Image (tube, rainbow over all chains, first blue to last red; front, side, top):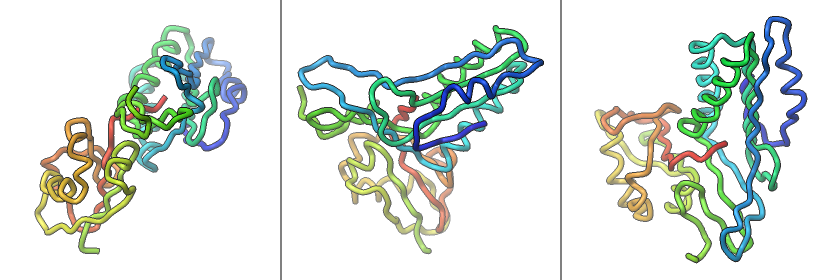
Length: 143
Length: 82
């Protein structure tokens, strides 16, 4: 199950949805928004945007790559768009496998691939402007 | 439509000052042929050139790939999902 959503992600439902009798391991990765207070101002929230439907399709491709590489019974990836407040989940990955090794490895693979190929961007919205993460373009004046 | 629809995202949209535009294309052009036209119209994009990726009709494309009237071209800054 691969989805891009604009509302809070129900992590519990995603995890229990991966339980199945032929899998003894469910690995869950939750990416949450982190606040960096390295300068005088602070990040108030993060805001995500995506190029759809390319981003949706890329999530599905990552799922297909995982099924080629590992024995998995279930893969779910959900990424949130729009405003995400500090400490809230922005991405949730759940992989069920007969054994723990593939579950851990595949969930790690999924988040690394998301950060490489899925056309999603986030900007940090600070009290004094914003900055696109990865491009360092924005409206904040240089520190 | 005689041109291509160009979508811009994230920092590229900021730099260009718009999220969508159209560029004229002839037959037998490549993505690489479009860049000078786009850069001329939106010079704010030029400093980002080396960081940008491009997609044609929703799939990553290289500069030598063909672009035809009616295609959708996307200008993609470094992705930062997760």
